[in-house]
Length: 245
Image (tube, rainbow, N blue to C red; front, side, top):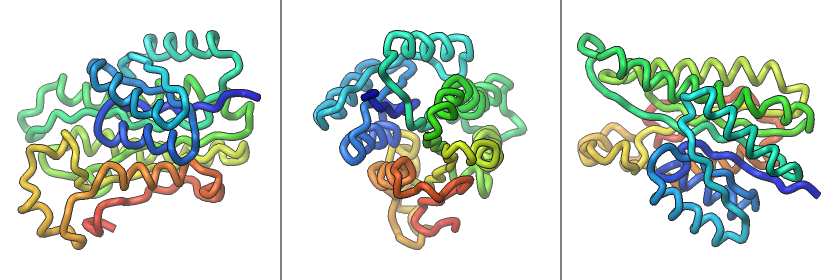
């Protein structure tokens, strides 16, 4: 019997970390944990995943680097012929906020490259096997910014908005092979990305009057990764306390 894996990109901290642990605890998936630079955080997450009695392997690569991504994933597949990746969670993303008028070219391209090209690089490399095995779950982590736009985040909004469209299109291409594609769109979630925001001020406009928790996002992702979500594809599911529904 083949060992079943879920790959989580940007999985060492925040939402990605919570997703990796939840996929392990609730669905008993072995985890492939991608990280770019913070090895210490990745090792800590690995320890927490393995506490759920599954294996966790660390894969260090920058998802925006197509050649590196392909090589790492190819090497892993060759070294693990008895393993299959059933779930891809495209969570890796960065922000480089600033007014568009003054936005540097590198701040535009690095944000687009990580969220959008990262989705292409990872998913395209693994999709053929999913289609061959006629089962798979692709879950893209997008953002409130990609649906309603956010001032100071034209680059991030563009990247996540494009990922929303890609989710809907890919779902239509591969549904017949029993591979679903959905996106989860968090609002304000307690994490490093929101650490500098004034929570007291922001929560005034959130109907549930609080920021969300990474674990709540992970619960939704885990549901979409499960067989219970077999008839859901091409959907963008908001998790934002009613801020934008």
